[in-house]
Every structure is written in C-alpha cells, then in structure tokens.
Length: 236
Image (cartoon, rainbow, N blue to C red; front, side, top):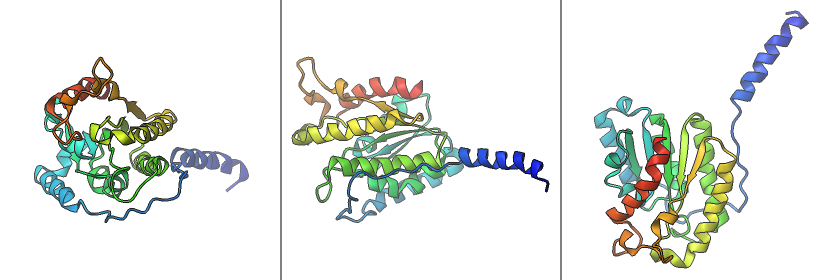
C-alpha cells in the first residue's frame, strides 16, 4: 500500500479508537474489603431473574431500571408513579455499591436500559467501618462500569435521604453525596437528583411522617414526596 493511501486509513483507525475509549477511574482511598460475602443477597437476585425470565428478557429491553437498596425495593407504587414510563424495579434490600457492581451484569447490562435511576445509602452502615472516600470510590466503580457498558444510557443518581435513625452520620452521608455531585458534573450522561429538601418540614426538621417505625424505611407519604421530585426529571 502506498504511503499516501495509509493516511486516511490511519485517520479512520484513530477516530474509531477515540470513540471507543474506555472510561477509567483512579481510586482516591485505600480499597475497602468487605467483611461480608459479596453474594449474600443472591436469593433476591435469583427471584428477579425468575420473574423476568417468565416475562421474557427480550420484552424488558430498553426500559428504565430503578437500581439500588431497600428504598428502591420497597417502592411498591413505582410503576404507577412513573406511568407512562416503562420501569423495572431491581432494588435489593441492604445492598451496597460493591454489591450493585457485582450484580450489574445480571440486573442492569443485559436489559440495555434507556435510563437508570440509582439509589444506595448503606455503604457506611454495613460491615466494618468505611470512610466517605471509600464509599465514593465504590460508587465511581459502578458508574465507570455503566459508562463503559452502556455509554448511551442516561443515569440519574438520587441523593441519600436524611434517615432519622442514621442522624449521627448525616455529615458523612452529605460528604459522599457532595463528592458524587462533583463527579456527576464531569459526566454528561449523569444527573444528580436532590430529594433531601422535600423531606423536611418548614421548621427545618425531618418529616417523621415519611418514615415507618424503624426511622429508616419510608411510608407511602415519603414516596409521594420523592415522586414529586424525581418523576418530572426522569420523564423529561
């Protein structure tokens, strides 16, 4: 091949390489090694797989997946709250970001979702102590996988709620969220949804009517407040 003919070929190869560039995240903290089994919630995942297989995975392609911990799992009115958007609830109770990453192949990627809504607040509260920086690293690991596997998918991250039972750690929770906000500002397919203001009363206290007796999980009123904030953003 003549030299002048190589130039356009090399140009095409360089463009292709640039378009397929892999997202890479460099952790900022020492890697967190959980003291619980990463597959401890396998039973819930299998239940989802059985349910979705009965429907047919091909029929569940391109929908919006709500993915995260128990605040997603217990969102019983999710389908009605986001109608006419077709949604899938893949919340599994007590999950952390590493577990969400571990199960992403089975609960996210094979569905080729058009949109993903993420929520998780358990990383500081499961197993041995974890720093906000380590929790952020684990969020970023999941976000990076999504960018690489689903580069055209829109991702919404819901801020961690001010759970009354976890009030002593609100400062750490807010630090994680602030780090995630800065991350999201640098990634065009990601959007931050702040639900915290909707959970306070005019006097500045958290609305206790939004929580069940454990002061952690939410009542229907709590989900109503979330819906008013999240729905118009995700449906836009």
